[in-house]
Image (cartoon, rainbow, N blue to C red):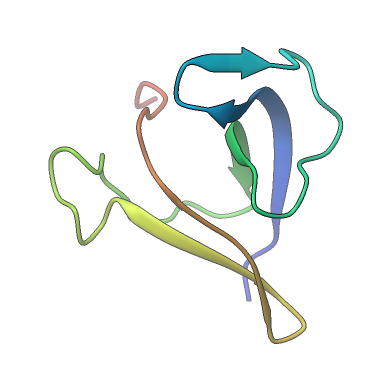
Length: 78
């Protein structure tokens, strides 16, 4: 298994029109958030808008799904 860490939770969104908590420390169950993720090893992903099959992800911990999401922005390649 690859290790993954949340590097930054930038915005929590509770409704389509209102953005709350620009620097949050956690996200409540059922909430929507924009986050930055970091991984130990390179993984193959694409933007959801380009390739929907490679632009989705699921985070699991001890057999439980803890988050699902879409990749909306990628860092520049080095």
